[in-house]
Image 1 (cartoon, rainbow, N blue to C red):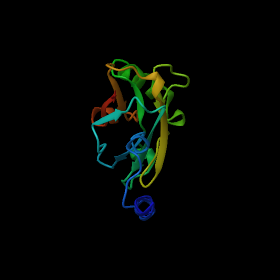
Image 2: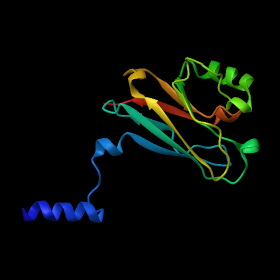
Image 3: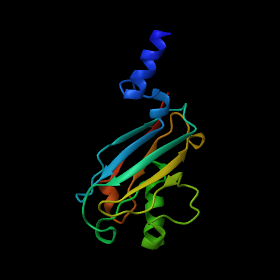
Image 4: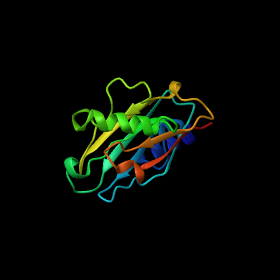
Length: 151
């Protein structure tokens, strides 16, 4: 009993972390005014039903000048998604409406803003190559990375 009370006290004090599975179903990606993401790889645990990505724009420039979003597609579909997103324009967050190649995307945000997207993990297949990228015109040359379904 004493051991259980001690464990509860440690949890309440924040000394013990939450279960890894719960903490592992989300991540934070930062973007900046130098057209960079702070991560190059995102590993999605297959035990998650939903995986959340929070995008924080840590820069200061407005979204009209240095806006960023995150779009998820297969690596093979990335260029087509970018081309169609550019044609869709800023009002559509540079993502073509109803594009089946887009597994998830966030809105475009500017400096100091935050947004979130959720990925339906059931849409991901083990061994497939997925990409995350910013679809703001010209940004994907630097702002891209790989997303994989892990174990």
